Length: 120
Image (tube, rainbow, N blue to C red; front, side, top):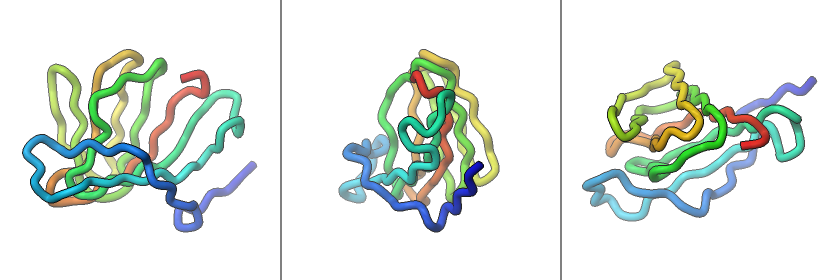
């Protein structure tokens, strides 16, 4: 068993962050705080991703389902057919192979816990 305190997790820069459409606020950034390190579980990957204002993941897919638990700020999730605003306490389920993006709004940072399978 392990207990993880979010406040004690190192924040590692994520190499890429894509600005939201129409963003004019300059460079966007995001960081990752690893909850379950590589090889730490046979079944899951888990980390916190922190988005600066206007930062997104860009469009991507996963080989497994993805669960997002919004932990701070306000943001959005979208796929090819719909977009939803999300806030603290919201939980998002994204299906394997679904093209999607998620990130912060132009006026708020956003953080979420992401959970995928270890094989993804």
